[in-house]
Length: 210
Image (cartoon, rainbow, N blue to C red):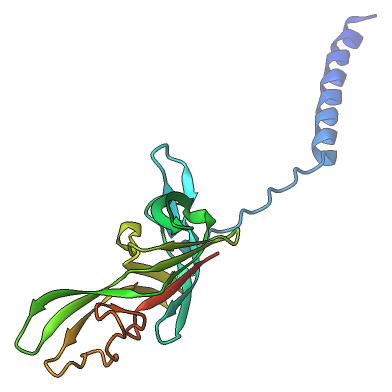
């Protein structure tokens, strides 16, 4: 082989390499695009909470709040703890029961206790606080609690829905005039004068959870 033939071979090899890489570029399969991620709904992000370990926990959803005049509203609210304990009596025996909020289906207020606050020129001011509470679990169990809702932190509830945020209450303040009529317009309690089963129209009567 002479010198000229020896010099041509490297040039042919370079041309071969260029054609090889060009073919790979032309016939290579295009990379599939990644699927877009769904945007987060702003309302959902507000309902996330993190516990002490930084884990995200979902807020409980209240299905329906029923007021004393029958009006209802539905929305979302955040619970302040995982559960609660209470005393109840069955067959004459007192028990202490522990429940998680995720186990509760309904809480209904059966009666309110009138506690005198102060005497005024116009009459006597009373605070009507929940007394007898009926609790129904998602398993169909019923429990009756005689100590109200203050320990469950359900005297007031902030609820959010498409209309905005509203705060509702399970108690109210009333005024008893000297002529024994009430500012709220409610009739006088029957039997025990300090316990009533009817309630002011804007007060919470029942709470239901999903």
